[in-house]
Image (cartoon, rainbow, N blue to C red):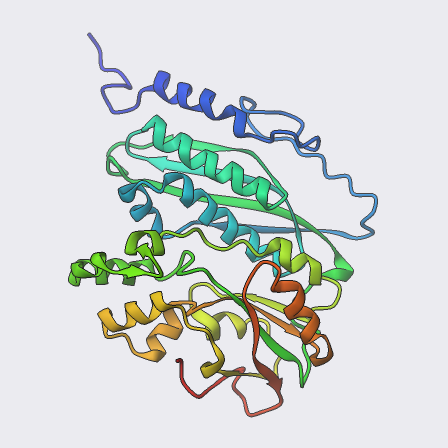
Length: 340
């Protein structure tokens, strides 16, 4: 008897069964999605008569090494929210409306329960962010990916009128720098977190505000789109605080010749970050480069609009001013004082 694909580690019948189970999560209820699971590619209606100069906003994202912990500790559905919330936040900062998401799950062996949970999380997160999961790929690669390992990625297409693009060019001297609170690590810094867990396993016994350590570190990345879109008409700039921290991300939108002066003592540092710094003996500079330290998003707005921004954003997230834009030196970011 000859060799079979199943002997090589790929069970096509099982994989097709998984795909059939997740078909209900694809494009449900969105009239712009013109087909479902099965065709070679997804069809999406992009007629926008209300937009004079439509510009597509495209982005690809993955949830980093947090996905390893997600599978290990039973957060397969939650990691879908992490990935999509991060993805949508990244186009929302440019003023874009998210439309359609494609995902991919690569694994060494397909566990139907794990994959179904991941896709459900991805689909639910898309719906919460007012867009649709329109298709994707599940790829079983034995010998390339270890059994029990899952690698996720996703891409989004958003839309914006060219005249409404938010890229930081409207930022000017005297603008307020306003923080939107994070709810934890979001999806960055997990390689360092896992190193701390390995070297200081006793950290697993800690509780943070009544939650276990794992519950605290596995909270899904906060979704900011619904909050940011309320400020698309008057905010001068947005910065999503991900890998690279405040300095590495806020500097991407500050125009040449200007500097965002951040008072670190005003940041409401979450207890989780204080715990990680203590266990890992992490310096302030390293923490600021690696973690969001409690600031998940930054909004730049005219000083006259700062109170309105705080009022609007506070409906869903903690929000407060942490600095201002100045004309000073050659640095785009200047930190003063220290994290508390």
